[in-house]
Amino acid sequence: MLRRFSAAGFETLDLDRIAHEVTAPGGAAYHDVVAAFGPGILAADGSVDRRRLGALVFGDPAARARLNALVHPRVREEEARRVSLHGDREGMVVVTDAALLVEAGVHLRFDRLVVVHCAPDQQIRRLIERDGIDEEAARARVGAQMPVEEKRRFAHFEVDASASLADTDRAADGLASELGRLARARPPRRDIPLARRVGAMLAGPRSGPRGLEPARILADIAAAGGLEMERAARLLLPPTDRPWYRAALAEAEEVGPETLAAPVVLWALSRGGPDPDFVAAAAASLARLTHADPSQIAGACLFALALQEAAVAGGAGGEMLSSLPRWADLAQRWGGAPPPSRVAAAVEAAARHGTDPVAARAACRDSASGDLAAGLVGAAVGIPAAMAPSFVLDALEGLELP
Image (tube, rainbow, N blue to C red; front, side):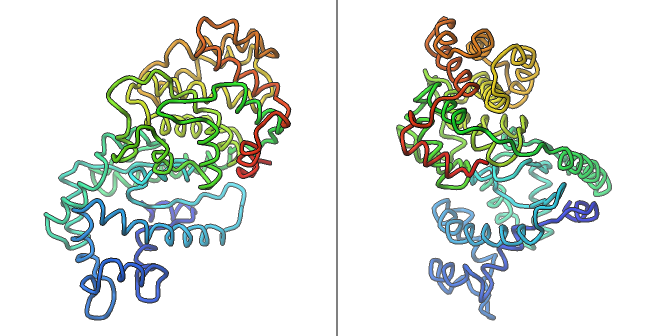
């Protein structure tokens, strides 16, 4: 597919190829990988034999994590360097081809995620043909990935590559056209006054599910330079040893995931102009860290969309009510079910009391909706920065908002 995107005029990066380069003799990660896994992974010419290394790591999650910790930072450094070479041209599209983005929890580094999929048996057969590995090794590689049906939940776009190459090329060409349109229509970054950013953080919920707090999530995003799900998973209580996307507990959480929307929204706005599809996708990813219920995940998306509008527009009036059905549809698309009524109730209360967070809170029947309503109004009217703890101000500054 990179071939078709390149033909469309996009800049393209293959992170697997970059991983080859940084682990080649003289590459930035070469010595670290050899020291970690021993000279037995080397071919006669001193290069890393990827088949030998793959046999060690694809069946051993701990070894795979150790390899990723050595290689991924170097790959990302090189990726960032190459992207910077293209400058910041208006309408520029850079397409990155990478495996295991969702599994590693770093998929939100990109404005849009495209999941290319085919049947598992086809995937195994194609791996054998492409890489010259045996069936056992191919199955180990596929087994290290998230099941494709699960991964598709995170996709903005999908390409079914199970048919002919010509069919896949046609789908890629259509997707290229849509990505180009999105890039040209991308809204400019907006100046969100500090008081409104503070209001979004302080007027609404102060705590969230599984021991997470909006302020801690904001600080972690600022420290990492973005929302990275494996990092966020390390903040969970009780701690988890599962992959981040399997960390949600079977029993229902009393606190909804929408309570963590403020840091997601403020980070998203630091990346560019208001982008409902990106905000909803990011809110859904964070919600899946703590909740398995599709309705709860949709609730996080709906509240994030409303909070983004409040922070950007500087108002929480009737426009929010007119947008509520559209936001609810988008939230359902990302969550997989209609959002819970408490979130819509909070939006309605905020719309009726658009300048008074106390009155908006009082207009709600329960404290959960009241906190959400107050947060929407706080994001719209603002709170003096002097009222914010220093670590919140530091984190907001770390997001590099305009």
